[in-house]
Image (cartoon, rainbow, N blue to C red):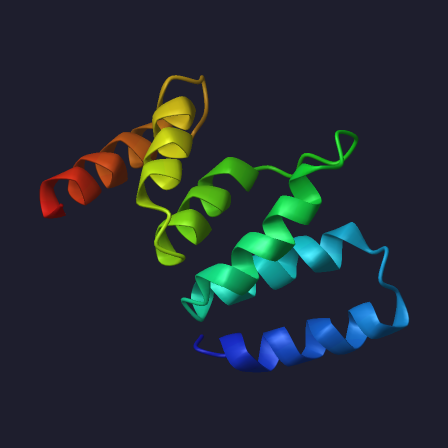
Length: 105
């Protein structure tokens, strides 16, 4: 609904109170993807990805988008390619996005 900046601010306030809340960190990453702020999104999503006990659904999809937004095209394509080979509901989206990125290079 276009409230990405508001969501980022609210999640940052929440994380000031509970910095160990990985769900809030995950959603902060998603909100930063929404803002097209790749560097901040990548930072948050990588933090979530390091916790093996907490792999939220879709993490690789959002991680790839953050990598692309941060200009890490080869990393983003590698992440999309890996996701595209999995039995995952977003596998076809990963293939489509990877093709689109490669075509625009």
